[in-house]
Image (cartoon, rainbow, N blue to C red; front, side, top):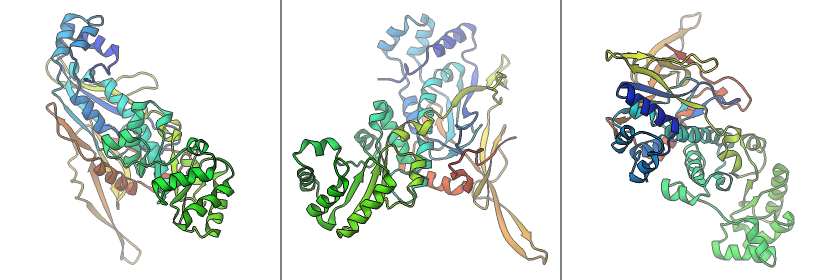
Length: 445
């Protein structure tokens, strides 16, 4: 099935009118950007680009689609849709990259008719995936070396759950409970048992024994169905010191983890890990930093963007061809919703490897490639060099589609590596969980 009907009605209304006026074939440039970051966020994370490319490749209208659309548009528009194939160019920030207000994270260049139809499908993917990735990045950074498992599938739409698992893994989660994400994207999957498994058996001991016999002593036992202290004793009695892990899903997790750690150590299970779950977000993870916890399971907060389920991205026309064939910048002037006209290029300015600004320009900069830098020295009063700074501007927009052909696909692991390096490039304030301004200013030139 094609993705053509993942489109708002008003896009077809505009298409029909543009075909009638003769403006449909004018060249146009649309950009995806956020006017501001969600409250409290210091940076956003780009995710979903690969899913946009997949959707673009499948953006078609089959006979059944066209039959349905006969009640929506006229015959001329139907004929256009029947032959629709995107033939333009797309540029964008790579997945895993940070973005800031005004960052043109995707640029679509084509005819107005081709590009306007893509607004809804592009925004629906990027708004969701960027929101999840931005939340996941904060959680993963806060967790440090402790692994996180994404387990929010039951708290969101079934298709969104798969995309959320992908975005979480991209930004540092170790695994997911969602099997479709494992099959489709290669995300490692993990999972053991719920309270229902314990309640099914005649006793907690019977349930633990069954799980250990089936999955081995390296499994994770859920210990808060009844009495937690008794559950720990039973678990170690059955598995011995080789028990892989126990999971706590309720109560004051910091206190419970301390009590369970003491009990495990007293029984000789010093290597048994403690996994905690239960309405965790980045703030709860931060509060557990000093607790004897070895890993986290995150569900609801992750798949809902930890309070911000959309990245607030918009898709706006910034340049169009006039009647003389000249490209002209355009911008809306609505109160509270201004945009900046003209096709843009974006660069990340760094100083000694730390990002200092997002530079957005109206023409490509004649600056160096990412590996070229400007050397400056500071000296003390005696004239001795104190340090050498390296200042460079790294291009952020990569070619994704050329003449309608996908040219910018990359493995998910490449995006994970990029995200790690991007986080290392951000200033320390970017990782603050307190409300504040974006960590890096956006400078328009």
